[in-house]
Length: 212
Image 1 (cartoon, one colour):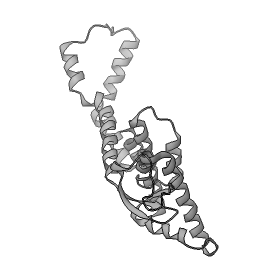
Image 2 (cartoon, helix red, strand yellow; image 1 turned 45 degrees about the vertical axis):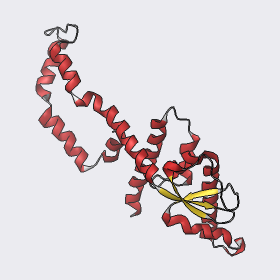
Image 3 (cartoon, one colour; image 1 turned 135 degrees about the vertical axis):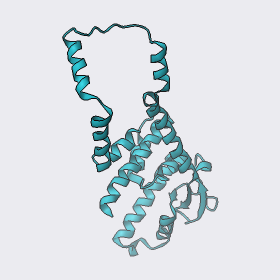
Protein backbone atom coordinates (compact mmCIF):
# COMPACT_ATOMS: atom_id res chain seq x y z
CA UNK A 1 0.00 0.00 0.00
CA UNK A 2 2.74 2.47 0.99
CA UNK A 3 4.68 1.68 -2.19
CA UNK A 4 1.64 2.34 -4.38
CA UNK A 5 0.92 5.53 -2.43
CA UNK A 6 4.47 6.81 -2.99
CA UNK A 7 4.32 5.87 -6.68
CA UNK A 8 1.32 8.16 -7.29
CA UNK A 9 2.33 10.94 -4.89
CA UNK A 10 2.41 14.33 -6.57
CA UNK A 11 0.44 13.22 -9.63
CA UNK A 12 -2.82 14.93 -10.73
CA UNK A 13 -4.78 11.87 -9.57
CA UNK A 14 -3.15 12.10 -6.14
CA UNK A 15 -3.95 15.81 -5.78
CA UNK A 16 -7.53 15.27 -6.91
CA UNK A 17 -8.00 12.47 -4.37
CA UNK A 18 -6.59 14.62 -1.54
CA UNK A 19 -8.80 17.56 -2.48
CA UNK A 20 -11.86 15.32 -2.61
CA UNK A 21 -11.16 14.00 0.90
CA UNK A 22 -10.45 17.46 2.34
CA UNK A 23 -13.35 19.35 0.78
CA UNK A 24 -16.04 16.71 0.26
CA UNK A 25 -15.51 13.95 2.82
CA UNK A 26 -14.24 15.94 5.82
CA UNK A 27 -16.25 18.53 7.76
CA UNK A 28 -13.30 20.76 8.58
CA UNK A 29 -15.30 23.77 9.83
CA UNK A 30 -17.28 21.83 12.43
CA UNK A 31 -14.21 19.79 13.37
CA UNK A 32 -12.42 23.04 14.24
CA UNK A 33 -15.39 24.09 16.40
CA UNK A 34 -15.39 20.80 18.32
CA UNK A 35 -11.62 20.89 18.87
CA UNK A 36 -11.90 24.49 20.14
CA UNK A 37 -14.72 23.52 22.54
CA UNK A 38 -12.64 20.62 23.86
CA UNK A 39 -9.66 22.94 24.37
CA UNK A 40 -11.88 25.46 26.23
CA UNK A 41 -13.37 22.78 28.47
CA UNK A 42 -16.85 23.12 26.97
CA UNK A 43 -16.80 19.47 25.91
CA UNK A 44 -15.53 16.83 28.33
CA UNK A 45 -13.84 13.69 27.05
CA UNK A 46 -14.72 10.61 29.09
CA UNK A 47 -12.84 7.34 28.58
CA UNK A 48 -14.96 4.19 28.67
CA UNK A 49 -14.99 0.68 27.19
CA UNK A 50 -15.78 0.31 23.52
CA UNK A 51 -19.54 0.39 22.94
CA UNK A 52 -21.32 -2.16 20.72
CA UNK A 53 -21.73 0.51 18.04
CA UNK A 54 -18.05 1.45 18.32
CA UNK A 55 -17.01 -2.21 18.12
CA UNK A 56 -19.14 -2.66 15.01
CA UNK A 57 -17.44 0.35 13.46
CA UNK A 58 -13.95 -0.99 14.22
CA UNK A 59 -14.66 -4.44 12.80
CA UNK A 60 -16.49 -3.13 9.74
CA UNK A 61 -14.24 -0.24 8.78
CA UNK A 62 -11.82 -1.65 6.22
CA UNK A 63 -9.50 1.32 6.43
CA UNK A 64 -8.36 0.33 9.91
CA UNK A 65 -6.89 -3.02 8.91
CA UNK A 66 -6.90 -3.28 5.13
CA UNK A 67 -3.52 -1.62 4.48
CA UNK A 68 -1.62 -4.38 6.33
CA UNK A 69 -3.58 -7.16 4.64
CA UNK A 70 -3.35 -5.48 1.27
CA UNK A 71 0.41 -5.08 1.66
CA UNK A 72 0.83 -8.81 2.34
CA UNK A 73 -1.51 -9.71 -0.52
CA UNK A 74 0.47 -7.54 -2.94
CA UNK A 75 3.71 -9.20 -1.82
CA UNK A 76 2.22 -12.69 -2.24
CA UNK A 77 1.07 -11.74 -5.75
CA UNK A 78 4.62 -10.54 -6.47
CA UNK A 79 6.05 -13.82 -5.17
CA UNK A 80 3.74 -15.83 -7.43
CA UNK A 81 4.71 -13.73 -10.45
CA UNK A 82 8.43 -14.10 -9.72
CA UNK A 83 8.14 -17.86 -9.20
CA UNK A 84 6.30 -18.21 -12.51
CA UNK A 85 9.14 -16.51 -14.40
CA UNK A 86 11.21 -18.77 -16.67
CA UNK A 87 14.86 -17.80 -16.95
CA UNK A 88 17.89 -19.23 -18.72
CA UNK A 89 20.56 -20.76 -16.50
CA UNK A 90 23.76 -20.05 -18.44
CA UNK A 91 27.13 -21.64 -17.70
CA UNK A 92 30.02 -19.22 -18.08
CA UNK A 93 32.50 -22.08 -18.63
CA UNK A 94 30.88 -24.03 -21.49
CA UNK A 95 28.00 -21.70 -22.48
CA UNK A 96 25.47 -24.47 -21.85
CA UNK A 97 21.97 -23.09 -21.28
CA UNK A 98 18.81 -24.59 -19.86
CA UNK A 99 15.41 -23.23 -18.89
CA UNK A 100 14.60 -22.88 -15.20
CA UNK A 101 11.29 -21.87 -13.71
CA UNK A 102 12.15 -19.81 -10.64
CA UNK A 103 9.74 -21.75 -8.43
CA UNK A 104 11.78 -24.91 -9.04
CA UNK A 105 15.22 -23.33 -8.95
CA UNK A 106 17.73 -25.33 -6.88
CA UNK A 107 19.52 -24.01 -3.82
CA UNK A 108 22.77 -24.42 -5.72
CA UNK A 109 23.23 -24.33 -9.49
CA UNK A 110 25.61 -26.77 -11.21
CA UNK A 111 26.03 -27.20 -14.95
CA UNK A 112 24.99 -30.71 -15.99
CA UNK A 113 27.37 -30.58 -18.96
CA UNK A 114 30.69 -29.51 -17.42
CA UNK A 115 30.02 -29.33 -13.68
CA UNK A 116 30.65 -25.59 -13.60
CA UNK A 117 29.20 -23.54 -10.77
CA UNK A 118 29.40 -20.10 -12.35
CA UNK A 119 25.85 -19.94 -13.64
CA UNK A 120 24.19 -16.70 -14.68
CA UNK A 121 20.39 -16.50 -14.58
CA UNK A 122 19.37 -14.56 -17.68
CA UNK A 123 16.09 -13.37 -19.14
CA UNK A 124 15.08 -14.05 -22.74
CA UNK A 125 16.35 -10.72 -24.06
CA UNK A 126 19.74 -11.24 -22.39
CA UNK A 127 20.42 -14.92 -23.07
CA UNK A 128 22.50 -14.45 -26.23
CA UNK A 129 25.16 -12.57 -24.27
CA UNK A 130 26.44 -15.92 -22.98
CA UNK A 131 28.04 -16.36 -26.44
CA UNK A 132 30.49 -13.60 -25.54
CA UNK A 133 32.33 -16.06 -23.29
CA UNK A 134 33.19 -18.17 -26.35
CA UNK A 135 34.90 -15.24 -28.06
CA UNK A 136 38.53 -14.19 -27.80
CA UNK A 137 38.61 -11.58 -24.98
CA UNK A 138 40.97 -9.47 -27.10
CA UNK A 139 38.30 -9.01 -29.77
CA UNK A 140 35.53 -7.82 -27.45
CA UNK A 141 34.20 -4.30 -27.86
CA UNK A 142 33.91 -1.94 -24.89
CA UNK A 143 30.19 -2.72 -24.56
CA UNK A 144 30.79 -6.47 -24.82
CA UNK A 145 33.36 -6.26 -22.03
CA UNK A 146 30.77 -4.52 -19.86
CA UNK A 147 28.25 -7.27 -20.65
CA UNK A 148 30.79 -9.95 -19.74
CA UNK A 149 31.51 -8.23 -16.41
CA UNK A 150 27.77 -7.94 -15.74
CA UNK A 151 27.17 -11.64 -16.40
CA UNK A 152 30.09 -12.56 -14.14
CA UNK A 153 28.53 -10.52 -11.36
CA UNK A 154 25.17 -12.20 -11.93
CA UNK A 155 26.84 -15.62 -11.79
CA UNK A 156 28.56 -14.70 -8.51
CA UNK A 157 25.20 -13.70 -7.01
CA UNK A 158 23.59 -16.96 -8.17
CA UNK A 159 26.53 -19.00 -6.87
CA UNK A 160 26.13 -17.41 -3.44
CA UNK A 161 22.35 -16.99 -3.29
CA UNK A 162 20.91 -19.87 -5.31
CA UNK A 163 17.13 -19.76 -5.62
CA UNK A 164 16.88 -16.54 -3.61
CA UNK A 165 19.18 -14.84 -6.12
CA UNK A 166 17.17 -16.23 -9.03
CA UNK A 167 13.95 -14.83 -7.56
CA UNK A 168 15.57 -11.43 -7.04
CA UNK A 169 16.94 -11.29 -10.59
CA UNK A 170 13.51 -12.26 -11.94
CA UNK A 171 12.21 -8.88 -10.79
CA UNK A 172 11.39 -6.33 -13.48
CA UNK A 173 14.36 -4.08 -14.04
CA UNK A 174 16.37 -5.71 -11.24
CA UNK A 175 19.97 -5.95 -12.43
CA UNK A 176 23.05 -7.22 -10.59
CA UNK A 177 23.59 -3.93 -8.73
CA UNK A 178 20.08 -3.80 -7.29
CA UNK A 179 20.08 -7.56 -6.68
CA UNK A 180 23.38 -7.32 -4.81
CA UNK A 181 21.96 -4.67 -2.48
CA UNK A 182 18.80 -6.69 -1.84
CA UNK A 183 20.62 -9.97 -1.23
CA UNK A 184 23.17 -8.23 0.98
CA UNK A 185 20.53 -7.04 3.42
CA UNK A 186 19.31 -8.96 6.44
CA UNK A 187 15.57 -9.62 6.20
CA UNK A 188 13.45 -10.51 9.22
CA UNK A 189 10.98 -12.46 7.09
CA UNK A 190 9.95 -13.22 3.54
CA UNK A 191 7.73 -10.15 3.34
CA UNK A 192 10.71 -7.86 3.96
CA UNK A 193 12.68 -9.61 1.23
CA UNK A 194 9.81 -9.32 -1.25
CA UNK A 195 9.20 -5.71 -0.26
CA UNK A 196 12.79 -4.88 -1.26
CA UNK A 197 12.25 -6.47 -4.67
CA UNK A 198 9.00 -4.56 -5.11
CA UNK A 199 10.72 -1.30 -4.17
CA UNK A 200 13.41 -1.98 -6.79
CA UNK A 201 10.72 -2.64 -9.40
CA UNK A 202 8.89 0.57 -8.53
CA UNK A 203 12.13 2.56 -8.72
CA UNK A 204 12.84 1.06 -12.13
CA UNK A 205 9.32 1.93 -13.32
CA UNK A 206 9.76 5.53 -12.15
CA UNK A 207 13.11 5.93 -13.91
CA UNK A 208 11.91 4.18 -17.06
CA UNK A 209 9.46 7.01 -17.68
CA UNK A 210 12.40 9.38 -18.11
CA UNK A 211 14.40 6.94 -20.24
CA UNK A 212 11.43 6.48 -22.59
